[in-house]
Amino acid sequence: MLRLEESAEAAKRQLNRFRQMADNAPGAVYERVDTVDGQWVYTYHSAGMPDLFGVTAEEIQRDGRAVFKHIDADQKREIAAQISVVRQTGEEIERVLHIAHPTRGMRAVMLTTRPYTQPDGSTIWFGNMADITAQVAAERRAAETAEQLRASHDRLNRLADNAPGALWEYREMPDGTVAFAYFSASLPEMVGVDAETLHRDPTSCLRYVSESDSQQLIEKFEIARETHTPFSCSYTLNHPQQGARRLLISAQPSEIGDGVTAWFANLLDVTKQEETEARAAMAFEELKDLHKRLSSLAGNAPAALYEFRIDENGKSEFPFFTPRMPALMGVSAKEITENGQSVFDAVHPEDLPAIIADTERSRETLEQFSQTFRTTMTEGGERWITATAKPIVENGSVARWFGFMFDATERMEAEKRANQASEELRRAHARFLVMADNAPGAIFEFRLTIDRKLHFLFVSPQLPALLGVTCENIQEDGFAVYTNVPREDREASIAHIHRAINSGKSVRFRHRVNHPERGERWVLVSLSPNKYDDDGVNGFGNAIDVTEDVRRETELRRTHEMAEKMRRENEHQALHDGLTGLPNRRSYDRESEVTDRLIPSPDPTTSSSTGAVRRGG
Image (tube, rainbow, N blue to C red):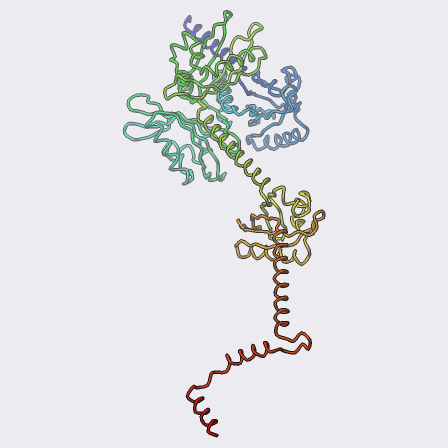
């Protein structure tokens, strides 16, 4: 009897402690009854729900609909209509609520819930919700869900069976056979294979994985198996009823003895969240051995859960932490247990002041602690760690924090590369703008659509000034660049543009501009079509003022014509009498020379004979 009482007391302490952690973890879960007379009664909700919606627990107790107090009328109508439909179909509701929180501004809360109609006509709703405004919502919900599992065995089993996500334990035997030791009720529906088939052939869970992702998924499994490290991988599953879905799998291999490898994994449908960040909606159903399984899952999870407190003497300690934390921080479990300060000693000296300051801020404001920092004591060199924790109050002051931490090295390195690329692009763009602003002519990028509309995607400042128009004119109608171009030049220019587009080759042409301030100007335009698509063509070009070149060409042509005229006049005067105007001797001699060149010379022999005859006569 004494042993039974001790076990009961231990279970009660564990339940209270877990309830305390669940009530103070981010997010909320609830059980609500919709009575036959239309009342909403929350038979259970975690302590975080009132603050999540910006209301008080008393308001929720008086009227369950008070949770929607800070939601706009349109959303209320949508939710009411959705509840009415789902109450009949029994389907799950998953939607984002936009809440005008009275103290924290607009917040986005993910609500997931499912109805269960009771024989008396009432409806019981089991649901969970989480603030997804912050990027760490997925990890926060994971910690919250894990804590809630320990608080209420029966209630969380129901949530695990009916909420999104699937959890399983998969075993590989020494003889090569495989088997599911456990999987939650939602797995068959998520992978499109019935439970009986999954038990008979565990590999059937990969039946509908897309061909493009299948090899990648297998390679991830192989690497994790060889290195005994966890992995996460998203892939496309061509569901036989639901079509293409994006799923995220997280798995951790573990040697459990006798050559058996156990995989602890969870599967999430992240179809709707791929454009932002993957978020997790983890749910668990009844486990054969709750405490053993929970310990295995907590010990093999990629993130570390912990409880941190500062005693009355200012000493730091970690009363509870999962096995993942020592590996993340590079400090042994024994050191963390004996000296909580060892965790802070492992933080990079440059990052430690921010952690201390944020801890004090969290203590004073009762707001969440969240920091990303470096640790230098882990194997493999410097690593980035993200830690998040929520403070709770005991005896009027903050006494402890409940939170989690995870390895953020890859994310930080990716952000660093992205920032560097962005800075390089910014500098290149700035250099380009400086070059464009200081170039002697104007450069531009244009698009001509199939409906004959001209748009300028980019123009340097010189183009409007060169053509005597404004940027606003060009933005409203690309053909405004020809506002001051004479009609005959405009038609010729447009013909050149169409010839370039049809041939795909560059063209150069000149046209006049009747500039409103500078008079008539000549502009040389060069165009190059660059990219064709179904709706039109893009191209690049430049324009430069060649008025002075045209003037020099005109002067040279006029000078040449004048010189030619003077030459003809001088030649005429040289070959004609100044008084009579008749050809003179020089003119006669020139004509004789021309005649001699045209008439062949006589044969010398013939000429002599003829001469002899004439002399004899």
